[in-house]
Structures are given as structure tokens and as C-alpha cells.
Image (cartoon, rainbow over all chains, first blue to last red; front, side, top):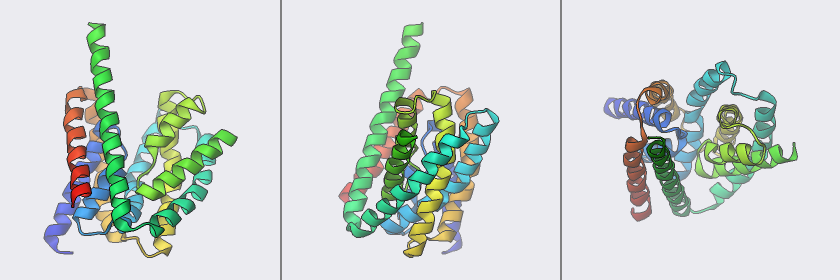
Length: 131
Length: 115
């Protein structure tokens, strides 16, 4: 990677993190398109995104733990069970053509966009009815 | 317990298939199926996602799809950004900004669908 590309990656990574914190979405839905933009294929972008979200997840868990919001036993059961789901997911993703995977991901983005807009609309109307 | 295992299985599948943490499925499921309050669901999902994302990265790594340097370049500044973003969120109303963000995601989805 060239120095220019590294600087762009660092800057966009920071911006993606700000957006994730600001809008309460995970980093993954932003990292995947970002990594595609940096030249990775769909499958490699998804794989790499999973590693890239770990620092944000660890920092977020640390904060939430201080507020007493983490139920460790529940998290452990869900997390360990998820490993089996992950195996199935990897199997499916690696057997799908990459352009199908890419379109599925685009549909996920649209669903997240719709959910965000709905949430914002609902909180705005909640404010309006408070006044 | 059975419900939590089911939530984990679904979340893991979703996470690995899309390369995302899966909070978008875990949080509502913890609230609806496991009766957690919203804040506990958000905090607990983060801790679970740590395991999920690590498992996904390792398994994809075995298949040779992991780019560690790319992950560090994007992921490390993002952790700092997320702390800043969360702090800003406590101070400013973001509802109007959210529409812009939703529009941006829609544009990105269009780019992925059409190219």
C-alpha cells in the first residue's frame, strides 16, 4: 500500500468509527464498503471487517461494563453458541459467488438505512408529542 | 438458555455471512426473546460480538481471506472515532443527521448493486 492510501485508510477508519458511535450502528456495515474501496474483494472485505471491528468492540464493552450494562453469563452463552453459526456463515459465504454476496450485503445496508430513518422519525415524533 | 443458544447461532450466521458484528440482530433478540432491558441488551451484545467477530476472523483467516494490515489501518482509528462519536451523541440531537446518514448508506447500497 502507498503512503497516501494508508493515510486515507486511517482517516476514513476514524470517520467510520465516529459515525458508528454517533448513530449507534456497528462498524462492520461501514468497514465492508470502506475495505471494498481500498481494493479488497467482497469476501476478503467481510473477513477483514470482522477483525477490524474488534478494537471498537473491546473499547465499547469496556465502557458498557463500567455502566453495569454487561451480563457476562448471557454474553458468554450467546458468544460461544455464535461460533457454530459463524462456521455455517463462513461455509455459505465462501460457497456463494462474490457478486451475489455483494448484492446481499447491499440489501442489508438498505435495511439498516430504513431502520435508522424509522428510528429517527419515531424519536422526532416522540419529542413533538412531549412539547 | 435454549433461547440464548438460538440467538447465538442466528447472530453468528448473520455476522459471518455479512462481515458485521451482528448487533442489529442480537440486540432486538435479547430484548424480545430474552427479556433484557435495552441498555443491558446493547452492552451484553457487544461482549458477545467480541467472541463472534474473533471466531469469524480466525475461521476466514484459515481460508486465507484475512488482511491483517488493512484491518489494523481501519479498525484502530475507528475505535478512537467510536469513543468520540459516542461522546458527541450524548450532547447533540442526532435525529436530523441520521436521515443524512441513512441516505449515505442508501447511496453506498446503490453503488454495490449497480457496479
